[in-house]
Length: 168
Image (cartoon, rainbow, N blue to C red; front, side):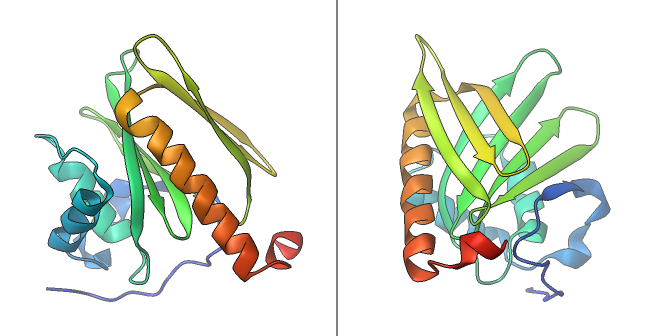
C-alpha cells in the first residue's frame, strides 16, 4: 500500500529522527526501494530491512536512488548508510538499540564531494555551504562509485538549472 504525504522543501539540509516518522509517512514501497538499490549494483546484505523501511518514509515520490554505500562505526556500534538520489544525499545513522537519525544534503547545496582510498576502507568528504562532513570506514567497493555518481548528479543539476545554485 502506497501512502502519499506532503513533501519537504527540496533545498532543506538537516537532521530528522527516523523513529518520529513512522509508517504513516511511507511514500514509497519497500519493494520499489529494493529494486532501485539492486539496479545501482549495491550488494544487498542481510539485516538491511531497517534501513529500507526507514527509506520508505524518507524518500520523496519522485526521487530515484542512484547509488548507496555503507560505513561502519565501531566506536558507537552504528552503521551509516549513505544513499544518493537524484535530489540529495542521505546519511542514515542506524545505531543499535538507540534512536536512528537521517541527515540530508540537497545536491544544490553540496559544493564538493571527494573519495580517498585507504588500505582496507575509504573516506568520503562532503562540503556544503554551511557544513562539512567526513565519513570514515567506507566500503571500498561502493564508496568510489558513490562519489562518482554524486558528481555526475551534481553536474546534471547544474546543467539543468544553472542559476539555482546561486539562489539557494
